[in-house]
Length: 466
Ligand code: NAI
Image (cartoon, rainbow, N blue to C red; front, side, top):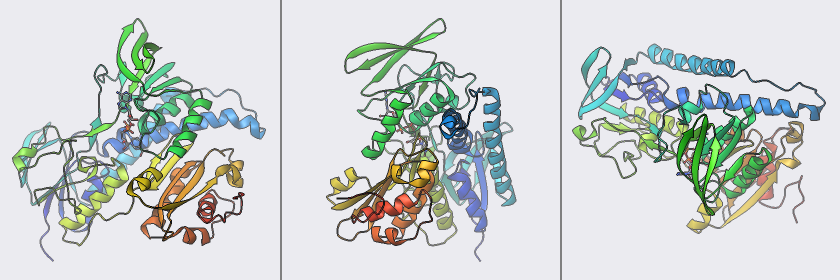
């Protein structure tokens, strides 16, 4: 066996820590450098805390509907400090778990800020001073940071980024959310469910740009039903404080207006993070959008330097970063591997949830691919009825010639879980007929996927297709 390679991984988010653990499993000598918290954005101030708060919001909403099932419940009361403590407990257990895993795998962890000083050297500044690590390979997994728009610098007091929005010191009476994308809508629904008034300002003509428009229509209807105000083609220009009031100046198609609120949350996207990383010293340069260009083995233009996760390009999703981390680790350890995925699932924890994998109708049309569509509504699912969650549908796009699954888009109950089956099917080159012929347990939500697959050939049994 060849001698272990000395590898420095910069960043301990879901791309970096997964890469580090896999490198250790493959016998390499690994040092991980992290300047903030083990677990990165995802575990500390992203996916995990948001899902905890969203689950609490959904429960509050569900309790409000319990009387339909004949269960009488008094008005639920929110104990916000207790909710935040519970959420922090989950974050603590997970980050503690990852720290333990790194230790068990004998990955060295240095808490400090890394800077490249050459192709094979990294300088780390920590509270104990500076040290230089020599290595064979470097993996850059520095992630991304929220974008701030002019007039709305994050002070995490008047203007929250997603980080502030996930650790509220109080429940805002009226929160203005700038940006109707993933984070804006997830947190918008969450705050509404917990009891805030919510206004979402979105620059484009609709929520969730780039997502399947049929699915988004269901989300937009739900926003209306829950009395969340979505203002499209609207830009936030600035704000001023008047006593306890926050006055947000906005520009709509009709002209300028002022919206009064007591909290602003700005979620207009994230950008890759590489400031102060010393890329030039190693001969690296970011592209226009700030990403580091990589090949299908996660190599940058410098062969012994790899990039994984948000810094390595869209989509900026934790699971895509983890996958890239595994590939970089295998390649460094000399194993044959490359990023060769047919699809990356996307899940959005709105109410109802939305999930998709593969191409959208718009993308297929643009590529000139002929396809058939099969759709099945949750309103026809017994399981969805028993959950009192019948809004939404599963939509399957299959190649008109080969019947191969090209895209699956869904909105409705538990679809963030359901999408896994669709991802596997696309990866395995399954056809709509394959999925339709597979027995799905009754009564479950995934039956909707089987029926949508049957609907591609006008053979769904539980809906009438002319
Ligand atoms: P995003 O790109 O999803 O949405 C930003 C929204 O802001 C867009 O709809 C855009 O049109 C709008 N916008 C931009 N500038 C604006 C302006 N000046 N005024 C009004 N609207 C404006 O970005 P977001 O929500 O900040 O999330 C960042 C990334 O984090 C996502 O792209 C996603 O990759 C990741 N994420 C993933 C989640 C998941 O997997 N469930 C959850 C949350 C975030």
